Length: 290
Image (cartoon, rainbow, N blue to C red; front, top):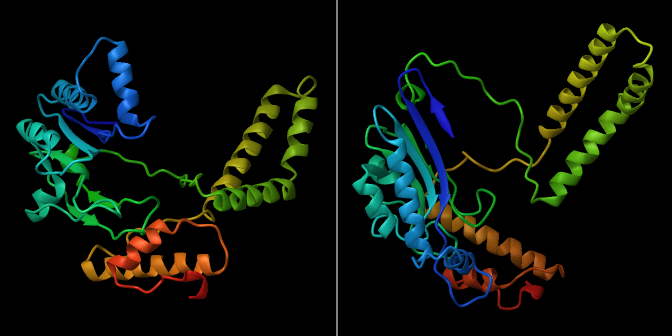
């Protein structure tokens, strides 16, 4: 994504470097390795990714252009090969730039920070927050980085806020409730019947008035969808910043919640439950009797 001003621009890049894994068939690493071999390229997929990314960033930099790179590198954000290459380009990891030290471990089962945001040397994040595990969708910590728009583009830039909220399609319950609410609103406003009436009257109606009616109906449908998406599942973001105490409390709560599901007979994996129980010395050896 390019944020373009009159005299400069900032390119926001999102990327993911695959983890090196040859133990299981069908991993992303093996898929990319197979593709490179078909292209007569013998380079390691991770090395090839670094080369491509560095070449792309070099093509962007120049003049007053800046780069903001959000990437899962699957290696240490300071000691890895990709961070070393990014440092040569003048890109600095956001947590290091703000606090002069790397952030906490990224994955729920990991011990090192492996994904962060890198910025050009002349871009300074206004705020950097790392949230505890389980405070967002997925098994990685959520990272929030705030930038001053005047700094990453230029002063006096006109902006507009998006009006649509994101529907988390991975959550079936959320999708079903949103669809049900939208369908009820569409039926109560007789949208389907009105669309059919418009379709049948097209041949004989005044075209200008017909277009006005269609536009009014379209605006109402948009309003209905906006209303129902306000009711969809919201992520618990921005509530509490990372701290060891909050992280422990969050993981303990998550472990007891999984234990409760097991005790109720729900099908759920117990691998993560036992990992968290061992980590925090919790007795969930027999969760069905918890």
